[in-house]
Amino acid sequence: MSSENPISQTNPRKRPITEVDKPTTVICTVVAIDHTNLHYRVCSVCEKTLPETPLNPNPTPTPTLNPSSSLPICRYCNFNNAFNPLSSGSKRLFRVLMSVATDTKVFVVVMFDRAAKVLFGCSADDFFDFAKIHPFAAVNAGKILEGEMLRVTLSKPKNGNAQHLRVASVVPLSSSFQPAIVSLRELYQVRGRS
Image: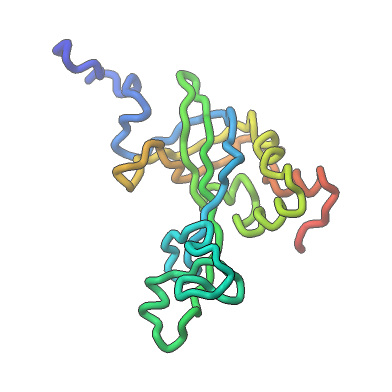
């Protein structure tokens, strides 16, 4: 083995996690969650990303704003749906930056909607609505999930510009695990949906 190649050919376990070509499953612990930006807005029809705030803060309706809600609408869907303009709405999806620790290192991963719903126990829209009424819900959700042992499958990002590994799937390992929204409802003494 040459000195130029530090990766062991006989022991693939010594290969750094960030250089994984295929999805890899690891056991890890949640160290921290970035609670400042847990979600992003997408078109409810095609799921293309939309700006979080309207492009024109002017209260008068423009072609890129839905006049009933002053929220951005999808230019793609509205362009292709000339018979029913302003028909596409928006929704929120989770995008959670999370620091995790394995037995060998601590690193940041990004967890998108499908995986995040497992830990949060609700949709991003439901969590956003809950957090509007309870302003510290995002901070408390991070505290609730800190220390949770998880089995996660990590994959390389699909976007070449992305800088963090993606969580493709997540399984909480604690038999007493309950999603963050359940714990938050108990904390704030709020009844959940049936």
